[in-house]
Image (cartoon, rainbow, N blue to C red; front, side, top):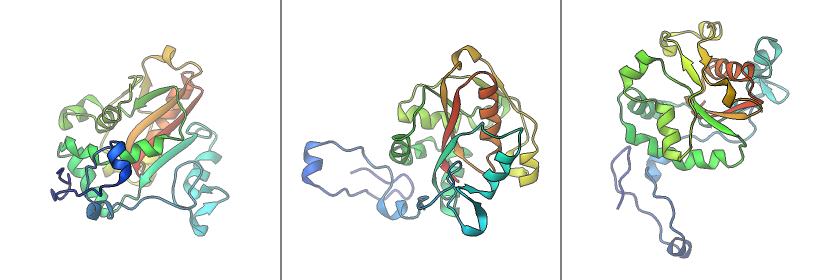
Length: 230
């Protein structure tokens, strides 16, 4: 019996006729813990996956994305982000253990959900949001790269990142005013290609839009992304 990566309880899987003939992917989280992950559902922003609220939307865009798209400096670079879960306190704790305390195995929780999210996404190349050298030394691994590896996706390293102060310490306004922090290293690989970026959390969208702008400016045809939380 496999054990839940969050609470360490045994995971009981129902035996069905289908399971006898088709080997399903082993779950890494028990049903009780999975219920605490709040999946993003219903009407969502056509760009960032935010659940739509009449007081926080305009047309098919949330107000945040509407502001981004009205800004000529940023409009049109990120075509679509799919986020899987609401960034509630429960998920925040799991991601903190994974991202900051090095519990690499926790990435396995998200693999089945990411695979479902990727089913309807089209892309030619996959890359991940890179860490600065200093941040990589601190954590010992790139959390986005770990997700891609477990998904079996071949990634290309086309972006480098200079060291910046931790995003979690910045206000919304400060994040949106950040100067470009990415540089493209292999522009020849990007020409006329559609790029998928993998990252862990979509907050203001600044990081992904900076990456998307760098990739599009270097010759990519389009950029989309998938993230765990929104």
